[in-house]
Length: 483
Image (tube, rainbow, N blue to C red; front, side, top):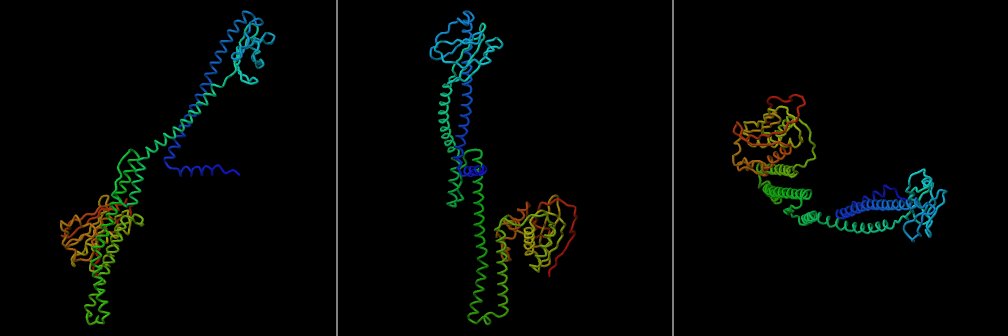
């Protein structure tokens, strides 16, 4: 039972794909040379056969003219026909009655054809024809002479063509073998940079040494590939460095609250085991200690959430959508008031549509308001303004606090950075870093300046989405007072 042609083709394709690139290049080079040699030999063989045919026909015409001239002088019946020498030219005379004369000892020629008969009768011009004899093919030329005709023939000899073909076959095989060797050499030379690149990649994978640099060599595609891998290694180095810094900073930031929490919990456990909890810690002190524990747990929870959010980087499963940034600002302000009841937020927002991730934008705005709420005095609200400015959505959050020192401005968005004046306040130093990451991911920019009230002014510019004619949803000032 024969297999379908499609199955055989698929198996051949799978076999070919499993071969190495060096083997493929060798096979392709050998095949290309074999095809070229075959076509060249075919053309050369045809040209050789044509040249031999032309030479034989010219010789037959010349010999027939000599024999015809002699026949016209001596007559067809009396023209002398030398004995056949054993090889070479064959001749005969066709008499007017259709009979023939041949030299003595000459092999028998094929019968006179109908066309040759018409030449002898004078009704047709000279004729060159090839016919099959008993053993060999003949090339026969018929020429009108007197009242009849003369014929000169030659046995077609294919031995030169056969010898040429055999020679060309041997040369072709040598060319194919040489082509395969040349192809393999070229493949080895051409793929040497890739071999070195592979060895370097394997070495990096085994040693985990991301500081390795692959030398830039070659040109074209090889150079672009090496540059791409070097860029990838540089990106991995930066990622590992950022990860190491994040872990080190997280360890530093977590150690203090965890130590304080552990000491307080150990104190409660030790007093409880001794049965002196009530006597050693009056109700007021115990309440203060439990409140301190709750604040520390809340601080750790916030820090863990911010670390998780920051460690994700730009990776997020949240889809991008066109949304009204005013909705995000109002929701974040409401959330900030619920988290810190003492905060008061004054909103002056205008409907501006942007393309972004709702949760990420909400977190950034909430961090801005939380940061401003730490510094804003009790009698001064946090002012939040949103407006469209050209092709941007501009969000400004300012407070009436002491502002940010000029020395702290360059580092205000660094991870875990906290100014000396902020170390006594709650927080992890990650809030503004998360703001900058979210804004950068949305193609915007964030800056810090001093507000008109003397406090800090943080400004966020985001690309605005195309207007859809829906109008402005918010206008004027809305205040979310303290509880």
